[in-house]
Image: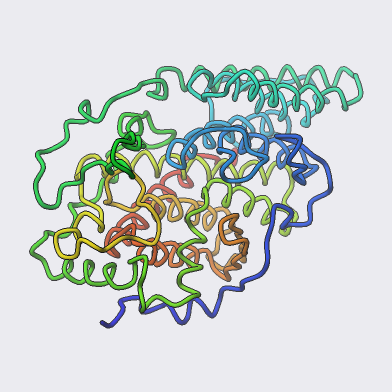
Length: 443
């Protein structure tokens, strides 16, 4: 079979593989998050509290320093909310840009930006409880990190004024997100699934007879109020390829060959590529963007703006993507191929929600388009790492990341190629909308 990965040889040529661990980026040996992890944290306030937010949202399975519990779909929304607060606190002190929220914050002259950023991030995370899902011991980690951070600052009027700014920003952001759908707990039946027919997705079965079936993920997202979009369906794509179409047949043959667990066609490098993107991509992206900010020597204000633009776009991309997923209910490759080859299995267990469009592609498309708008070019060198493969991949262009993700999801056996292309296109539309409507300079 001729692969439709026409750009694969070129793309692999632009990606460097190196050993990678939590310390990629050469950050100073300060610790935060779960103390036993001894995770190297950035010393700038924005980077520190961006990392703290990530630790409080992403599960420990993506690294021992994390203490959250959100799967990537929900996590993207939470990261967007907290980074909007970090941005608003930074803008309140430094000025120059329009805030995300609708609360006018007028700090006293000389207010500490460090204290403002810390209080905004911490109080926003607390304000997202109980939907954030932190247990009492997990919240104690967050509270302890905040207390230590604030205690390390010299007592002063500037510190007190900064804390006041951060708390005001957090209260405004939390109020803005009240009743946004995060605390809803819909069942699968609440989303009106269609009848069981060919092409219709059904939840993953239990892994072994007698064991409970895995939970379906992303059920809140279709009804979640977006962070920037007018509605979740604003950029809803057209329907997936018909089962009788040539495009669907090509998609099916490709994933059957390249995505099966025991594929004899997929190369070792392609297997690494597939597994690389089975890490929690919010952890991957946030660490990578902090390294990017450090390498570009961005100011605190510009770092906060870049992260907010990217994470708000990423959050809305997930809302839009899951709106489409639960609108079309398209089946996964393993479900389609079970009709042809009962022995076919994907490289790794398939995520438990509908296939179309690809969520990884939606998210990556949105982030890269937001970053492209921020830097005014696609030619941005970006390094991301994976705790699954213990490797890092360096991309010469932002668009190369999306190509890598699209290919990886087919190679893992999770998605059809057309679903990746559609997801990336949806993400780009969301990223362009966010960058064009929010985080703009004053005047």
